[in-house]
Image (cartoon, rainbow, N blue to C red; front, side, top):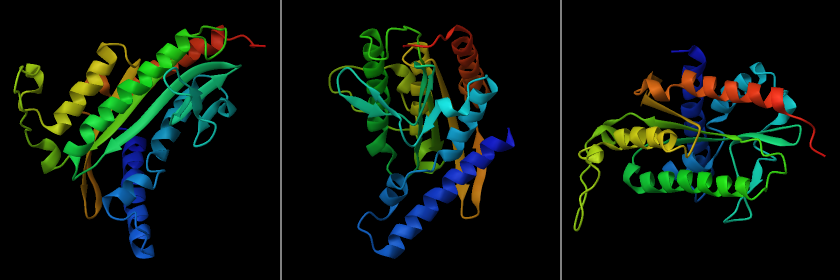
Length: 242
């Protein structure tokens, strides 16, 4: 695996722990695991990886927005902040989500993550149809990258309740890690997102123990290749929008 991917995962883990320790020591009420989640910035190195691929495609760095100016109008809501967007010559070229999940509360967060991802994509596609991104109808590229902790709780089969109807059998005895993989795969299968990336990582007291890509169709290389191809089309087809 590319060392840059491993470094991005290591930065994620170090940042998460640093933010958690800082808030706990300060006596802030937002402590514990939640402090690590709400601190932000953990996925910055993944954003840098994506930005590099976009720049390699010929899109200027000034057209890539992270942290600020990342709001896009929606249809069901006024606007939403994306983790990274590309606006080239007045055209929305890409909108990307970079998300993660660590233990111990996998069960509490799985549905929230899936509903958020599907809702964001649904919202932006209707906004696109309604012309919220200008009269130039260049189709933006939507990407979803997800990192999940590979541990006992995420790898253990999860039971379900079926009081009236049976679930899709692909989810039968699937762990949360497997559920996330299926979810990312189906986001692309149903064209909710143009590409999705799924990574797992094992962490230890010494840092990152291992990083894997369980599904080759959801690899970082495939994700970036799809994005770069779309950015090259954007560069070739874009015209100044008055």
